[in-house]
Length: 156
Length: 313
Image (cartoon, rainbow over all chains, first blue to last red; front, side):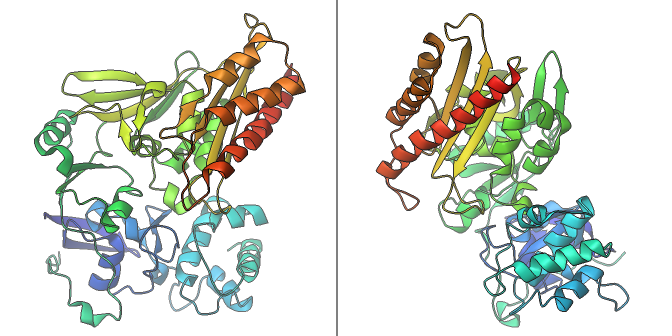
């Protein structure tokens, strides 16, 4: 087991920490930084509940080592709202009831945010492709798709 | 500057459900390829290479692997570089992530078959980390990028105790999770020659769902005009998930080169692919089902490629 000194930005703030080699980014976020919005679902990269942005691209935090984020920029669900204001994508999920139990919602919002960052005007198929790695067992997905389409139309 | 926080994780009791951990290991990030070779030779089977980690960490979590040393090679020089030269073809660093690979303009323009194969892997966020190099080195019979590598005649460039050597993709897969890599060797890049003029290709993956499950059957077909062939065309076939390794189907390739191409001959080629498949029964499908699907999907991919060739010719 090795120990690593890492420097990184988390939701815009510069931080540093000592981490042991086998700690995942998911465990680091939840148990060290207290950022429990990122959920622990399958822990095998299939459900997408732990999706965060790593240098602007979505990753499954359960399959990244904390030691690997040295020098990186990490955005979690806690980093989407600013100054107490939800971002348009989050508001669209509320307006469309794109959430039920809510467990998958942080990961879906992060995947959707990444999609709109790289493609501000996605088709329905683009949205389905982008959210393929995020499982939701409640909503049936249609309301989620509607919410992302609406947020895109509003320039979100 | 704030002091680094405590190394130890707080007691799990502070959370209702602690995140599942990986077994302990040493994490090493060498910056010299020869250091990697030395580490591989020193630690042997108790060392594992890390690029995207999308297969390694899942296997470690499942208890299938417990390496003492994990060697991160993705930051080595060239490992994340992609370049295209009209004379020399496409060079892809082993650690180029799959999203970057599929989005590269040269891949979209000249190797769309490769982009199709990559896009069929899992999900977007998994592909942010997953690499084609890792996909090949895992040696899984179901590797989605392997059939594309086979029909595109890719070359695997490896670094090892004797420096660099090149292994054709067609000789790279030796068995289930067994590749031609020797002790101390690791994959540094894949080289794809310039594809044949006027070629068309198609990869079809059958999974249990459209959501990126592992392949039950994967079929890649590539065809191109070739005046030296009696039929006027040559085809290449590769199959995934239906034999101990990804395989080419030379019988089908010979068939379509030797006589004028008719609908009946396309069916015979699909049958030859079925005959070449030696699948197993597993939770994703029975051997019998897999063989039938090889025939159907080979015919479907072949029809598509043939129609593309006719439209262009």
